[in-house]
Length: 83
Image (tube, rainbow, N blue to C red; front, side):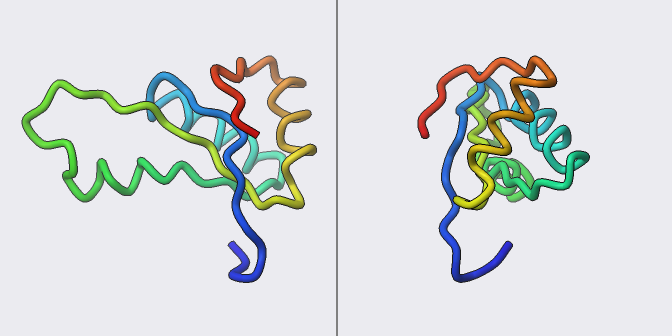
C-alpha cells in the first residue's frame, strides 16, 4: 500500500472470513485490499472469547469505485457499505 494515499472502508462484513474472501477476489482482479482485523486475530487479540468480530474491507481511495464494481460483478454482497 502506498503511504501517501488514504485507505477507505468500502464494506463491513459479518465475519473476518467473509471480508477475507472479498479481499482475495479484489486482489485476483489486481486491486490491493486490506482486512485490518486479520492482523488482530493473528496477534491473538481475541483469545478465549467467542467473539467473532466483523471484518472491514479497505482499499486505496483511488481504487474505491473499481473495487465496489468488481465485488458487485462477482456478486459478493456488501453487508454494510460505509463508503
